[in-house]
Length: 292
Image 1 (cartoon, rainbow, N blue to C red):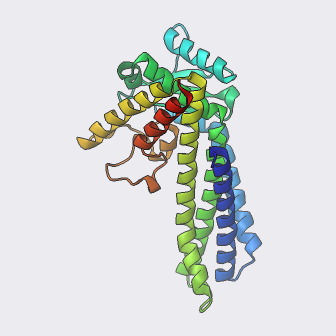
Image 2 (cartoon, rainbow, N blue to C red):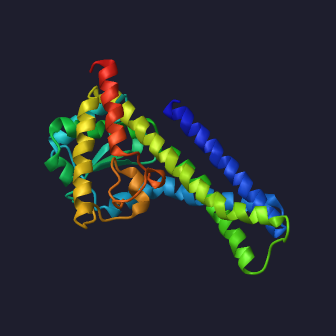
Image 3 (tube, rainbow, N blue to C red):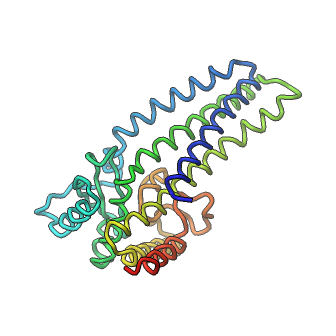
């Protein structure tokens, strides 16, 4: 199944979960379902509209990313400009963060307001080809409008979480039906967890899609695979010795090309990213099939 089709299916599933928990809470608390859905969904929309418009500023500030000019970083600007031309996109702004862990992320509400941020570690540890492969992945996120997709997923999952909280809050104060309401109570507890898993699955799907599209943009899938391996090894080494690879908010982990916040025992099911080994295998297959 293509990445775009899979994403649509997962967004539909999130919508079904939203309606399901709205019905469950309404039934359990004895209030109209439309009330629970409208209030929670309206709050989620408001929150995510604000996030969609301003999150890039917060993210850049959080990671102390400095927007750099072409004079300051000529090679980086040339590389990103070339990839933007290949992708038929406006050239994004370029930023550098102080982190010594090799990584990169893209942010911005649309291609016209996009920023690609690169860590100092990526500039120092990645070869030129690896860096180009990594940047092509971030350019693919911009082209695929993954920031918008992730915002939509967060909006629906957030609404489900709010409704579930309302249901548990009502239960705490003695509300709720007895008897047949037990199924509704189970739904109130389990559906928010299911929504989180679906949201993570959407994030993993978009990562696979960005790998494939990034390979198309640069024409260098093996360079991206090599870059991913270098970044993964750096993150693993820091986790192994008890160091945190990145200082920041784990809620932003989906932005990075490799999750820098995970613990050593994190399972893929609860991760925003697929296993790096699987991503490398897919890229190697793309290279073999297309004879890059």
